[in-house]
Length: 361
Image (cartoon, rainbow, N blue to C red; front, side, top):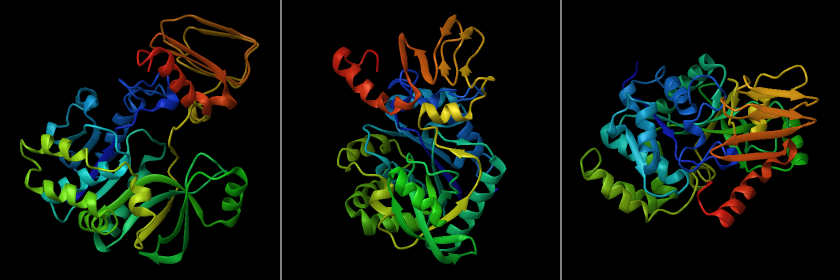
């Protein structure tokens, strides 16, 4: 296994679209949301064990989730858990992890990925990441993985690429587009040169540090100043103070959309970002009338179809005459809403917070 290969798992989000199961104190990356026996972050960690040495895998997360990471990934040392004092989007998260790794190993090649995605074809995923790491080591480029789209989905960002390639399969990126309207998404699919943006990145430490210097110089300065304290007792207090100076910006907007050396690898490995209950419903096992029930031991359904049900396994739940609904109970909270209105969950969370404070959030 290549000692220059590193992985950064981004695990700081709160997953509010999966409320009430995903809460601020215990967000979705730390939940076995698909009923597989492992949480999403545990599955992500296990995938990267196939790619790089375990001591080269880092998690960047909010400070309040440190104990959750330690509990769920006991092999991970304190020095591999990088904590953020505040949420500042993905650019500071990436900068922290990459600058720290660069200070340890200037020849490092790094894959950065979210902690809460689903990968069904792990062998294809491992192959795609290894190819990307090899190319990133050989070229001064920033690589992103693009998913071959199966439908005109409005919930994903899109990447357009052209015919210019390196290493035969990595295409030069032409444009990034945020979540489009349905009509625009249909146009993208028809054109044949658009991919879904999976938010998975691969680059050498040198290439990404140079990109921060060019496109986010203030952030580069913040994390370059910390080189003297990385991997010492002073690292955490220094970085936590420095984080307050970071702007709130994504790595996509801050660097990837501006850089001229960005390439995409068209990929197919059974990917889902598990962003909504609809994505869970699509993946879950269903009965003959389309009901997906997790867990199913004590749920009885009459004249009900196409429902997504997730309730505590010790509670008896009886549903009658319910069609195309989401029914979720957790943490002394019950949510019932039509499946086609699940995008309103974020607003519901905001309303609950305003009316009842953070008790149920």
